[in-house]
Image (cartoon, rainbow, N blue to C red; front, side):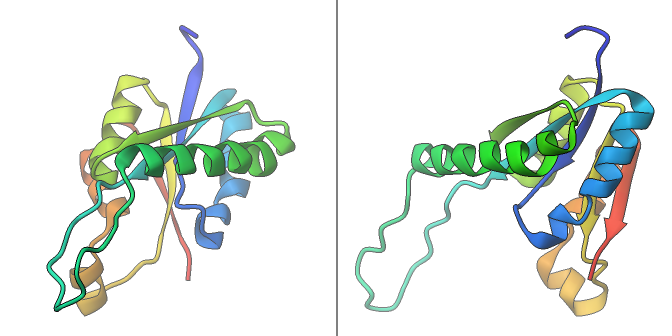
Length: 147
C-alpha cells in the first residue's frame, strides 16, 4: 500500500463519534485517502472493592475479540457503505498514545476525531484524548466538537 494516503479515524462507537463520518467522507475524497478506523482497548484496571469478593474482569483477548467484531460491523455499515475505502484496527493501550503512534507509523495525512469540548472541572476529571492527540500528533488533526 505504499504511496496510499491514510486518514486515521478513531472511534468509541458512540453517536458522537459517528457524527464525524461526514467529515471523514469529505476529507477522504479530497485527499484520495483510505480511512483507517481504529478502536483502542484499554487494559482493565482492578480496583479494590468493599466486601464484594472477586470481581471477574474480561481478558485483553476477550476485549479485543469483542472490539474486532464491533469494529468490523462499524466500518462495513458506517464507512464502507458510503463508498469509502476503509479498514479497521483494534489496538491495546492508552488511547491518545495508540492513536498518535498508529498515525505516525502509517504516515497518516490526517487524524479526524470528535471532542466533547469540556472545560473546567469536567475537563480536569475526564481528561481529553483529543487534546493529547492534538499536542503529540505529527500530522494535522481535525477535531470536531460535539455536544
